[in-house]
Image 1 (cartoon, helix red, strand yellow):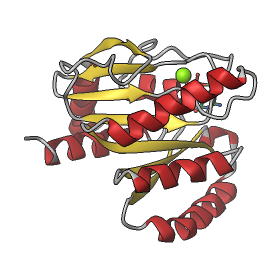
Image 2: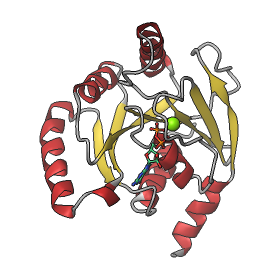
Image 3: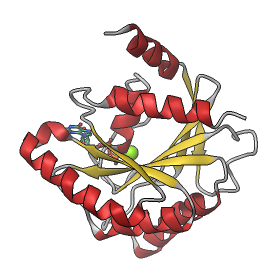
Length: 210
Ligand SMILES: Nc1nc2c(ncn2[C@@H]2O[C@H](COP(=O)(O)OP(=O)(O)O)[C@@H](O)[C@H]2O)c(=O)[nH]1
Ligand SMILES: [Mg+2]
């Protein structure tokens, strides 16, 4: 491991759980550090990648049961930035009312969380892109938020499949060029591509420091 990677791991390993919030107003003004959020369909691997990034086994709870995270979990990294784990969208087995509440919460967060500077939209490499993901790209763009795309669980797919995915997403992203930043390929299981995400979070947090 290079010295740089070691430093990044130390930086991200200095973390605390700030709390679980089920409305934007519940996130108190004391949580006003620059924030990066992880968004995606239920079960896409949000909690797993947050654990991999923060080098923590259980900071964000991972679950085999989709739809369990129903609030926004916030983690503070190195007293200098926040990471937000958003509830998953598109999980069919919760009630319609619950689904609407969750999508209102996500939408309100994306539109109105002013200290959120960059969103990572996660897509399961094996499942690919769904309509709800495109709705999310639209919401982010309409809200003037820059975003990146993280393909997760790459250990489940051959390289040729990942290359095709990248090609098609980059073509779609031509329509979002003002807000789209880049794609990442990660496996939380094999700890691959994680350092690339750490680097970007770190760099963007420096860039936006007031
Ligand atoms: N093979 C593989 N499985 C993963 C990976 N990341 C997450 N998973 C599994 O996918 C399921 C959902 O993960 P979780 O992080 O809870 O997803 P979330 O609902 O988006 O937070 C769990 O069973 C994880 O073990 C990965 O990189 N590779
Ligand atoms: Mg989760």
